Length: 482
Ligand code: F0G
Image (tube, rainbow, N blue to C red; front, top):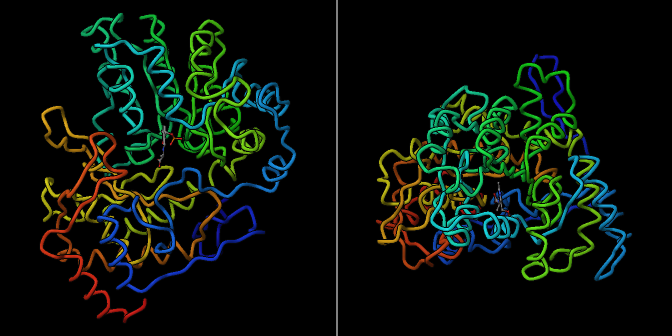
């Protein structure tokens, strides 16, 4: 919630209090260097004992509420027919308006089933922008090409456009004409578009996409992993929605999609996912595959103990102080950095503060994994674990060439209700120091990499031994420890 201070400044105030905490440690810079070296300069490979602030992701690491913990204890454990599942299905109906729902073990499991059932081998799947796991399933499971039809503004990291996650409607119409509707598996809209820097789409845009899908008889699938943030942005930024509630906006968004899925690891603050729809015949096409890949219908690969809290999480995510808790922290974070001239994605989005690594490190060529280098440097300078969202997060093409990402971002994610403003202030200060010393940061090269989703397991090394030099410069300014 935003409270106005007497100075006129707006302060994002947390509308919750911590009643259980976890101790964290900040290890000295020399040990941080050793840890990132051993991790192959890949922050996925770090151990949490070597991390001070874990801002890798907002996925599966959010703080559950007291009511969610209560639901965890109260779970009706059963392989089949658990009443907890039916309570969850009621929450889906009440909050999202869908009659039919099946759980899956996480978001990518939904992507697997949807690509398997609705993908057209040799065809295309259209989206506003890809997410890593989505693209992998479109290519590997559906055997299709992932077509991204974002508006040109989407790739401008410095922008004031309120809805950079919009799909370009003209491009959508042209693509359907070019490929033919029988070649299009489905159209997918991703709420608070992750890899564009957590940028939302507008309700107006979603309605236009719906109209085009209706005209061509195409399925519209909504990835709602970050739906409450997208709804919060619509509430804050879109004309005509300022008097609606976040709950009403979420319902309206859902009413426009044929099929909805999400990773529950984000907005519902648990670990799991689901697919929901009002179209029984579509549900019936997916349902037979659920026990093959996930589990029986009333648990779908999730622990029953997470399904109860997921129902509570759904009901809680429509509260603006929950829907906006990370957004308002991110806004504070981004605006401060932007004010200092440090290149970040604007306008501030959901999910994370995204640093524009291409602008931060203009001297590092794109062949040397710019965002990967900045993400590793941040760990050395601060003990903060961020995530590379750039070329390392793209897999090679079939000839083995790198596919250069549109954006090179270091993503500093804000798990919900976990970190405070003092943590953010600390990162801002260390980013400022890194920016002043950016010439010390050079590129990376791959040492080993798997063929698909290489960012998870790939190992890299630094060029010109820059990490040693950066660590030494840090110690000179801050001493051995801080
Ligand atoms: N869709 C979106 C928009 C996502 O952000 C994610 C995951 C998924 C699908 C896949 O869900 O992880 O439950 O299988 N995003 C995480 C992240 C991994 O860190 O942004 P999952």
